[in-house]
Every structure is written in structure tokens, then in C-alpha cells.
Length: 379
Image (cartoon, rainbow, N blue to C red; front, side, top):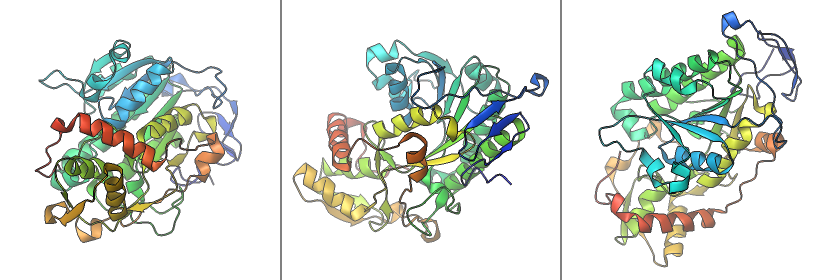
């Protein structure tokens, strides 16, 4: 029997869409698909080969932190990039407005919402690669508004899957997961066969979205791959994440307010994460798989505070604030990425050390400190 997408993906066998796989996940042959059944064919793309490299791509969530970095990377790589951004009365495009003018000039911007299936179909049309990063990602917000998070992260993903299923142009759909789906590590490093645990409403929605992706791959032959980045950081990230929370406060006062400082995280610089998205889209062996990316090293929040203090050249004092604590059973104690699968599929290896990434992040936050409300807790 084929293994679950939550493990190592398909083994020897043939899907209903006429695909045949080897045990390494390589496509051996492609049968004919019944277009009346809206089965999309996947044309294999060898990672790094440059052959049949599609250049018409869509990025949902492009105005967000990782999405804006991925968008910039794709444009610089020569792709024709369409972005889906949610309409707002300010007429801004999120972090896309932070991109260099020459990058912005190359973008085809679609306004729409993940909850609107017609908008998603229009955005997906004629795109060879679709990167689905659109989501509500803040864990504290998921405690306060779980229904909103379900509507966006689960129903929104279903709309993306349906639109991709109906597209004759689609060659690859990359769904964005998260290391939060694993919950507290039961063993380390955490590989793709690690049990899943919804320790927050946010994590539960991402588990559900992953399961939908698996079901569309198995049921309809949709060329889905799931990327599970461990904690990503870098320029443009909001103070909802731990590193900008520490840095933004430390730049304006000697005391930073945090929750617990003993949990451990595996931290990857955003430019490496963006490279991982591009690489997995070009990797035929990743079809039907969930794949971790991370640095393979973890650090406690307390140790992270000390490291940032050294880079700033001054000590940082931590003050615990109750509002920043997760419910006890919801706290993820440790995340440490096992990346053997990514290494075997496309030779994954982060280029940035933790300190290099932190230095670039500090420089960006210092330049944009006015964007951070350091006196209040951002949920």
C-alpha cells in the first residue's frame, strides 16, 4: 500500500490518473487522463535540469513575509509571476510594496480572497506552478478566532485545490505546511513520519489542509507536494514571530517582554526557505510527498535572546508576561527538523548561518523600527 503523504509519499504503484512511480518517487510513465474528470497531467521536471522549466507561476499569500521573499526570488529567476493579494481599503499589497521597483514592475497582481472560489480560479488559470502560501498564521489569533482560521486555511486550500484540479496548464502545486503540525517532538530530529498533533487551532487547520492535499493527489492525480518549513525568520516578518519580537523590543529598551523562554526551535533564514520552495517545485521526486526543510539545529528562546544581545553589543533582560503564554497543553516544547528527505531529493542545504540571518534581520528592523508597536503584544 502507498504510504501516506504525511510519511514518505507514494511507493511503487500507479495512480488513478495513470501515473507510475518508482520507490524513489520518480515518474516512470504518464498515462492518459480523462479531461472530463478534470484530471490534471503532470509533466515531470527534473530538479536543477532546467528542462521544461515552467515560468508562468502564481503565488498566493504573496504580500506576506515568506510570500514576498519567494515572489522576489521567482522574478529574479526569470519566471512570469502572478500574485494573489487580498483586497483592502488602503489599496496596499502588503510586503510586495517593500520590493524593489524593478521587481514590482514585473508582477501581475490579482485581487481576491481565498474564500472566493471564482477569484481563485481566475488566479490559477494558465499557471504552470502554483505556490499556495496564503493563510492566517498567528497562533494566538487562532485561539481567539478559530472559525476564521478554519475558513481561510482549510476552505481556502480546498478552493485552491479545486481550481488547480480544473486547470489544464498546471504542472505543480506546492502547499505550504508548517512544523507546528508535529506538535512537541516525540523524538528528534523530526522526520516526515513523525506523528501529527494539533496543539493549537492553527496547527489543526494546517493538518487538515495537508490531508486535503493528499486526498486530491490520491483521488484525482493532482501533482501536489507539501513543503513543511520549520520556523522561518528574516526581514519583513512581523512581531507575531519570536525573533522580531525580541529584536524590536531590544532596540528601544533593555528589557524585553516574552512568554516562556525554555521551548526550543529550529530557525531558518527566509532566503533559504524561499530557495526551498523553488527547489521542491522543480523536483519530480517530491510529487505526492510532504518534505521538511530546516537547519537541523535547535536553540532555546533564552539562548536566542543571549545571541541577539551579543549581536547588538549589550545584554538583554527578559520579563515574563502572562498574556504571551500559550495554554499549557498547547505549548510546543521542541521542534528540530529532520531534513534527510530534502537532502536526498534536491541536496537541501541552508546557505545562511543563524548569525548571518540575525544580522540581516536586525539591520532591517532597525531601519523600519517605526512599524513595530513595541509597547503592546501583537497577536
